[in-house]
Image (cartoon, rainbow, N blue to C red; front, side):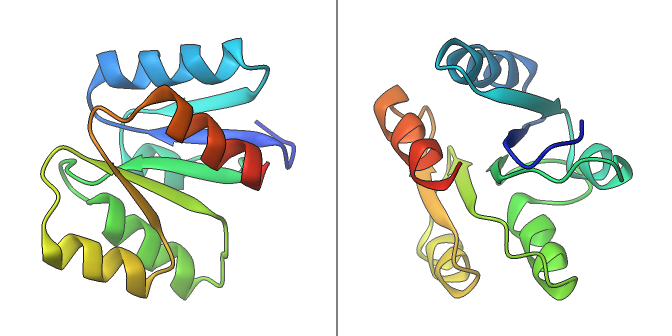
Length: 118
């Protein structure tokens, strides 16, 4: 998906992925949905305005994905969602400049983040 106004959602839980996609599309956003961090990285065409990414995914966690993007000088705004927030995850998210919400995130909080960054 080309275009700077795209919101990329990355979550290995298909129900969460579809729920967030539906929420954002209903609010008028263009969404690219990915079932893993590697699927997102393999999509070289995508240049999203911001990311919503799950922390706990196989192969690469959300924060590992963000760290990789930051190494590549990608300063895209990121909202991390996690069902298991810990002080270590919060500290690393803060280091990377990532906003964090606990799963399931409140719709209002997700939309507020997106509206501030798209």
